Image (cartoon, rainbow, N blue to C red; front, side, top):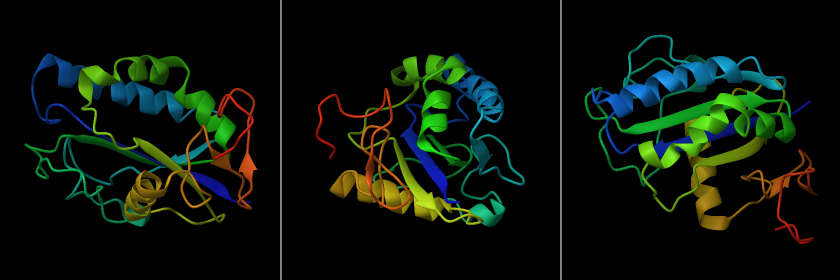
Length: 185
């Protein structure tokens, strides 16, 4: 059975290594959010570095998730001292469980604060796509899908909660998710 891959990406206002209280709060909250989401029904796995420290994304060993990559529009630092981004790569059983995890609890609280931490870039902040059972998506896959979504909009290749697709490529509509009218884009 196919699994749903989710890649998220945001450009932070300050580097992760910034000792200011706002960045420490973001980082500390993120750890709690990851723990909670990891217990959510429908969650399968996420990319975790085998080694590294805060901000050490580009140099870290991500194992089967591949070499860390970022979209072309990211123009900030790539060192531990200058990296100003937050990215996740995860696997889910379906769109509904991912939606429920993202828009509830600690993650919902963090979303409500996103503009305290993240720049508004005009680019999508997340993308979904289906992978075959046993396939581990890579960071480069996520970047490619996010850039495709930005350039072409939702399609079976790269989509959002609001305009999602089933594994066979047909548009789907899940109760409480999607456009408010009858058209599916």
